[in-house]
Length: 349
Image (cartoon, rainbow, N blue to C red; front, side, top):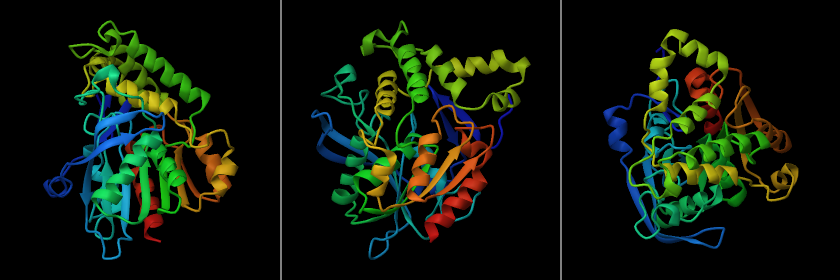
């Protein structure tokens, strides 16, 4: 099987861009856990024994004005964000740690932060549903209560991380100056909902799922295959996987993945409920957000439709970059240098 650039591992319906992690980066970006007690949710429910995983890179300056946050993507963890931070140009770096203090966050439901799989008092199906905004509010508490950050220079995120970036800008418009959602959206579209609904039903209908009360992790072969189907454009998949190697490649796609099935389900549902507009138009919401935006989308994206993000960019007068690569949602596989250079220039202004 041919893989362009960095190695790709598929976790359910997300693809994780695994890049080589140097020893220096790994030491600097050590996993940390913030214990927050209880985390109230928008639904009125509460996450008990709430914890948020995070990693830090670089040094915060004296006045605390150089902080850049980066939330994790769907089915990903902060560990996979490490290559996007560094003090040397790499072609895929997004945050220059010789200049900025980076904070990578584990989103709820990733198995590190509070999740159905790791909660002692709200295990499995008993874990409350959460939203992107709930994730961001918990991250805000880590910044203000644990790291004592008073202001953020920018929020940068890919995929579900980009959706959290939109939530950051709407929830805390005076707390951050810049926002860079990459293949994210302020509001999921009907097509987004359709694809996630199919994936959720594929998990629920798996014989091993058992209503989320399984003892052995279900295989979720169909859910894994569906996620792989929509994460890139057909021409990319055809080029990456020769027809003669399809059977071998399909075994990899269908193989058991790292993430717990309930964790995957809860994050997918969070995406399905993602909507920072709450009944208002993009123009109405954007008018009250003074944050400067760089909006990056993929023209062929089937995982997250680019239209709402582009409409947002138009209404706020934001810079945009539309990637035409066949990698589509896997934008950092085909277009890393173009994305990296634009993000770094935007953050440096």
